[in-house]
Amino acid sequence: MDVRDGTTPAPTPAAATAAVDEAVPATRRRLRLITVIATFGGLLFGYDTGVINGALPYMTDDLGLTPLTEGMVTSSLLLGAALGAVTGGRLADARGRRRTVLLLAVLFFVGALGCTLAPTTEVMIVARFVLGLAVGGASVTVPVYLAEVSPAERRGALVTRNELMIVTGQLLAFTSNAMIARVFGESGGVWRWMLVVATLPAVVLWFGTLVMPESPRWLASRSRFGEALEVLKQVRSQGRAEAELTEVSALAVKDERERPGGWQDLKSTPWLRKLMFVGFGIAVVQQITGVNTIMYYGTQILTDAGFAAGSALTANIANGVISVLATFVGIWLLGRVPRRPMLMAGQIGTTAALLLIGVFSLVLLSGDPRAFAVLAMTVTFLAFQQGAISPVTWLMLSEIFPMRMRGFGTGVAVVVLWLTNFLIGLVFPSLVSGIGISSPFFLFVVAGVLSLTFVKRYVPETEGRTLETLEAELRTRFS
Image 1 (cartoon, rainbow, N blue to C red):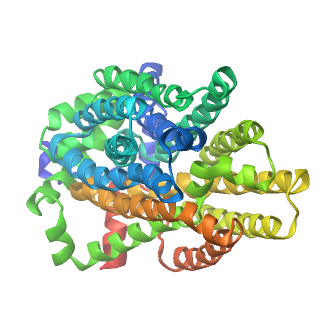
Image 2: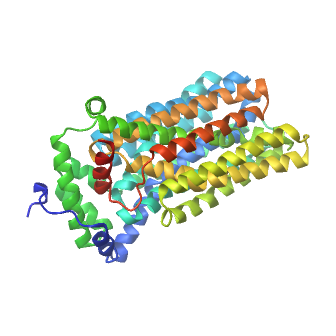
Image 3: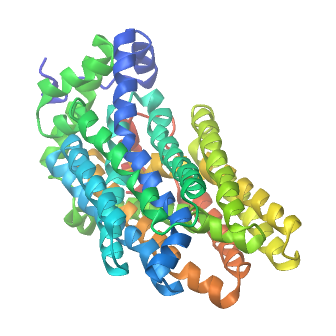
């Protein structure tokens, strides 16, 4: 039977799981290699967002930054990421996931080099914006690619490897910042050495992507079923690949009749509008915890709490270490705990930690007790954030949208995520300058309570379904 006629029933999840157990070691190795290469986009995402944490104090002196321009340098990347997310999502739908990643690797390299060589604040802002285009595009394309190439029962673990690489990139940034600062001391331009390191993984990503296959689901959406089957055979057993292609192709034919997804679909299809609202909410929930105030301004927060400048750089490494360890725990939990309860547990933990950061900053005198109390709470906060909220966010955003508009839908939701991130990153230095370090954290506590209410009421469970089964369930739920 031709798989394109869509008459063969889709395999059950149980049958699919049994089939994957027959996979030969070669297919497992191939899937691991694809995952490692693709997630170099996440590594660059993490390094380029985290490096500003240690570079900013030195850059402030060299470029003469004010609290306003400091926020602009930090947040220009985030504004670029918002545009890069929606553009990258549309490009990934139109031209393919693999070609998009190749382009992003070039942007990562050019943006990092531009930041390194920037002679003025204005050039730095532009270069950070270009770098943001790559970060935003990667934040959409890499999780979607991994979701589409992964077996259903391993999708959670494999997609969240990207989150692991993001926090690994941030840890690499924090560590290299501290090492470079110790080697070069207070010499002029030390921040340029911190920034140039990001060119190396960009080169690895470009060459690695040359040997990656295209997403089988994207190929099927273009009626390239033979190529899709060949890709599936690289990462599945023979029987699993053929059964999965039948299911994917039947849905691809149906989606082809309904046209590729876009703005018109949102206007004309009520259930997609409701689903997009949920995607927006998940994106905002991840950001209004205030996570990136710690990832971007952690060194300054610790300095304000009582650490010396050099000690704050070193202490900030603890934030990177706990982020990596917590993400390992999160990946383990995703195979055992449903997504929605995990997200809510993370919100409760982060909100409690933020409340205590605000309280300690307000009531304790500056010095070692205050410094180590704040450090302990930032570490606790990141344990819940990176161990629960962040991996579930990126995984759910790669899962919930239908195949014909997965890149577009994920891209638009991630635009909201980056715009929220941009606003927080832009105003946080001015808030701290105007009302002190503790008050902004109380604002994040209020936001955390509202977020928990949203998740409990609106966010669906996505664990344990193929992407095709999940699409059918969500269509029914929101219709």
